[in-house]
Image (cartoon, rainbow, N blue to C red; front, side, top):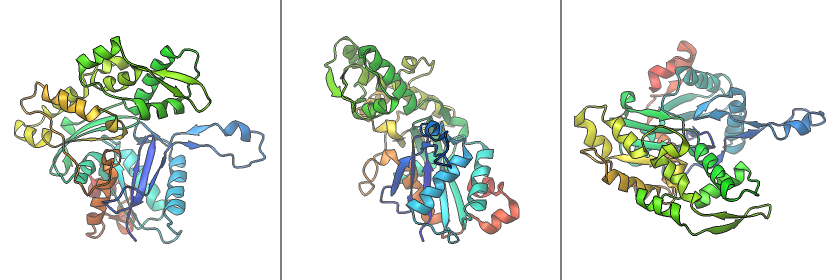
Length: 361
């Protein structure tokens, strides 16, 4: 049986057996609804709308909910049998606390009785997906944005940064802007999320964005409940916030400048190797016009060596940026498990959860 690869994000969980040139077989919402244990309970109707977030800003926060979610994924979704569990590889967000890593390996061995465990950082895996072992990743997830530099398969933590902004914040910004231009409409966040995925765009450059602010054609869109809304320049505000975070009320440099500043902290002899192998990943990286705008901003960068994007190999699945860490995990799983580089049940029984730091990072 192939090892299972799991990439648990704030919004979506990607899981499947390690087949590197195919997308993950399961892509499901991470968020869950609380189900009452006793249907006849008077509190049942109250619990129906209780939302549980197992993952917050990229890190597991609700371990009971995560156990339930993984149980569904592994046994129902992927067909594991109780008593015959296999091996599993998890992707690990930048700056994951040691305690979270230990709790994860403990849960997998003690609750799921797995036969082998491995974890690797998402930045490393996203580079593996495009055939690189050194480079930079700009990962814009739903709950966080990671900028990481990787040399020979190792994250350089001194020149990597995690920002607590992501697709969730862009959705909230879009909702705020849409309410200004459609004051009589009652938007749900799930409606706005879908509208963002369909309409959000990046202007060609700052000058084009300023022009759009003065005049922008409007489109009409009918919501599921029949309300009709107008969408115009708001769609460009979402993308612009990544290049001008002041739109979100943040005192930060734009995404390209942040990347260049992170890399400036490593030895100059590595700058070219890192910046010329830049990979964009995460759901928001697939926004219309984002890649073109990123490249344009990169060409105007003050850096002596300018960031240059790596194109994925043609044999890789479409929309690779959305699940590049999962694909990289599938590639790595083909190496670490057959070569016995993973944490075995015997390793865990002998050393305990702290074995994860020695064998995986």
